[in-house]
Length: 111
Image (cartoon, rainbow, N blue to C red; front, side):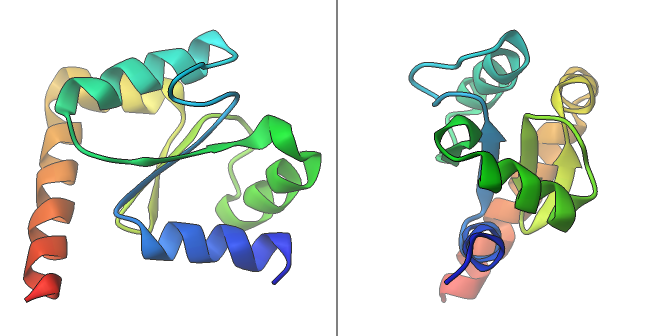
């Protein structure tokens, strides 16, 4: 499986995925850290992928998402956006709605 296929599989197989610099335990940039803090405040499990481990991840991720910056947050297979958009959605309450909808969909698919 090449990088692009692995990225797409990770996005498809997980309700919430955060491509970031560093890990959720040790973010390596302020923007990634800000999104981690927001995500952690919801207490919903999410997968973190460190783009610094392999430069090819970032290249292929950008090809998939058409989004040039890191971090990139995906919910239910869809790109939500980067740090600024995630913070705006969090402050407006829309991010919680997106997460709740994805969680409900995930629970109904598990039945």
